[in-house]
Structures are given as C-alpha cells and as structure tokens.
Image 1 (spheres, helix red, strand yellow):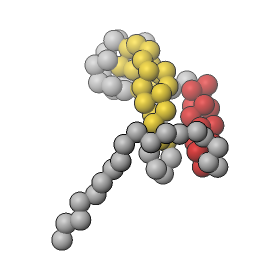
Image 2 (cartoon, helix red, strand yellow; image 1 turned 90 degrees about the vertical axis):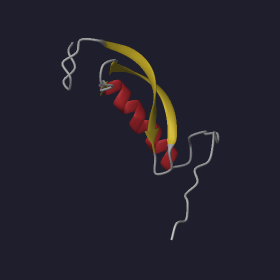
Image 3 (cartoon, helix red, strand yellow; image 1 turned 90 degrees about the horizontal axis):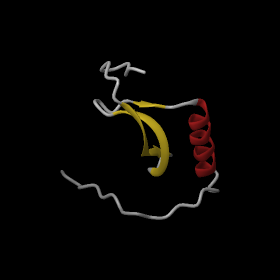
Length: 76
C-alpha cells in the first residue's frame, strides 16, 4: 500500500488518539498511519466504532475522565 498523499510505502498500524464530540474527547484507536506524512487510514470497523463512541458521548453514556483543562485568553 502506498500513501495517497505523499506516495510513501512506509505505512504501519499505530495507536492514535482520535478527537470526537463538541467537547474534545480523546479515544485511543488502532489505525494505519503513514510514517512519512501522518495520513491516517480507517477501515469500516474502525469508523463504525468511532460513530458508536460519538453516539455514546452525545447521550452521555460514555465514561470519561478529565485529563486537563483548556483556557482562553480574554484579549481586548
């Protein structure tokens, strides 16, 4: 398999943190990643899992933990 973006053949399975939800929820998920440019490749099973987790997050059925806070500077 070659990367559709950079044409590199250096693609490996890696665990990445995918962002879901209107608030950012990080989920660890295994996907193929181009080690040259970072392009990610998702199969149907992975996409289905992400959609299920998004649905659970929306209905507040997803167990989450706080790992930090985001602050915004109020600049006039």
